[in-house]
Structure formats: structure tokens, C-alpha cells
Image: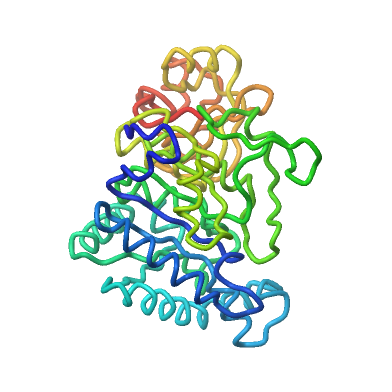
Length: 373
């Protein structure tokens, strides 16, 4: 697990993911070339001691301006896909030129949600990132919005950055935003206070967030950033939110220790970190209070404690686990399909065999294939 405990410690990162939002990169439909050039210079400085991966938004905004599409290209899924197709070319050129001035090679990498949700494809993405970094390139990653659908997509590059950090084995993620960090309430309210350090994304921390994107350009907001922090902290990765609107934003934030740092909370196995970061469960198992208490002691989910099933899923699919009042307890890989789960709902092991016609498995979700939230 990383030992980064303050913003200045980010300089110690051996591998850093820097996420750039649309509002920082695009203004009036045009790229902020001078700002990108200054950031590229900072990346070049960081590259002397660390690997750097860029997760860059902006393709839809750039493409929409070039095509003359309304609502910044977000009026419909078709508009967003068309805008992304054009904008991805513009975005790749922008980063290639900016990094090239420092003799750095930019490598475009477009991913979809499935690329990081499927274990085999996730490992392929991890291997690609590793090879690019070994070759001295700076990977520039973005969601492939030209083919992503509303149902199967990250929807924001904050969570994508956290997942890329997992796949790359990064020490830290730096989210460049249009605000200084997380405030204890809406920062537009009088008396709002910047939260400098967070030790675990709790329900109380989530309550501080707003899901809205102030710029209207991006698709993320503070809630998405907290979800990204939760993914990162579970994988032993530090995550920081800083204000990127300044020239040379990294030096500005780290030099003044201005932002919010989410300290890594655990260092689970690589497989469990991947499992905990997955975002698209195929269904929901609701459990009773006895099962919930057993989970707190590290137990598996047994059929006797399951009270409800939602969704249509296959054996091995990811499902969410909810408590008796709907609270999310975790997620894991289910040992039965949805029809079998419904058949053995609430049954003891001896009753399950008669219902299924074969010896039941050890658990509906085994503790080795489950992570708690």
C-alpha cells in the first residue's frame, strides 16, 4: 500500500495517473493549448522520477464544436458518439504535440467499461499499459465514447482514472478539477470548508458531495470523484482532487498543499481490488440481518440468509449484496444463476439438494470472491 499521506507526498509516487477534465481542456469549443502546454511541461518534469499516465476528457466537447452539434454534443447518444469520433482525433493530436515538445511520445488508448470489467480484458489492458510505460511512452487514456452506450459505459473519467490506476499498478491518482477539492457542503454556500484529508470514504463523506458538474461540459461531479476515491483506496492507491484551473496546476496545488487527499485504506490482492472496482453488477441479492452480521465476521453469503433476488444473471456474474433495509454491503461473483438462486432462496443446505437435484455449492457467494463496501 502506498505511504502517501499528504499532497506534497505525491512527488514520491513511482507511477502517477493524472486525470484532466473537459472544463479544463476545452473553452468555447477550442482546446486551451497554452494550458495543455504548461501541463505537458509539468508531466515532463514528473517523468524524470516516475511513470505518468494521462486520463483525458475533452473528445466530445472538441468534436461537437467541429461538427457544430448542439448541447456540446450531449443532446443524444448518436451526437455524443459522432462528436467523440471526431474529437478523439483532435485530442490525440493535442497531446501528441504538447508532449512531443519535451521529447515524450504520447500513446492513445481508448477503453470501454467492458475492457476493465472483464477479467481477461482487464489483464490485457494492464499488460498494454505496462509495455507502453516500459517503452517510455505516456499513455493518454479516454473512454471510447464513439462506441460506448448509455447502459455500458463509465460515464465519467474520474472512475476511469481510478480503474486505470489499478490496472497500471499506480501509487496515486491526481484528479485535476475546476474546484479546490471536497468541501463539507456546497462550496457556493457561506462557510463551506475545504476537507484537506479523508481517511476512508464513509456515508458521511458521500453526503458532502453533489453529483452535478458545474461546468456543464463534463459528465462527472464530486460524487463521481468520491466513487473514484473509494475504488482507489480499496486498492491501496492514494487519490487527490486539486484545482486545475491555474497555470502549472500540479506545482500550484502541491506547493501550497491545496486540495483534498484521500489516503489509501487497504492493500487487497490484485484480484479483489479489481473485483471491488467493478461498476456494473448484473443483479442484487438481499440478505437478512443474520447474514449481514455473519458477513461482518468474514463469512460467505449462504442461501439460508438470502431474502430477495433481483436481475437475470449467470453463474460467475458480478452481483451486489444489499442488507435488509436496502443498504449496500458489498459485491461478489455468484455461484448460481438467477433461476437457481430463486429456487434455493432461504433454504438450508439439506433442503437445497432436494430442490436442485444435486449437491449444493459451499455458498451463494464465497467470501474469497466477495468484497465489502
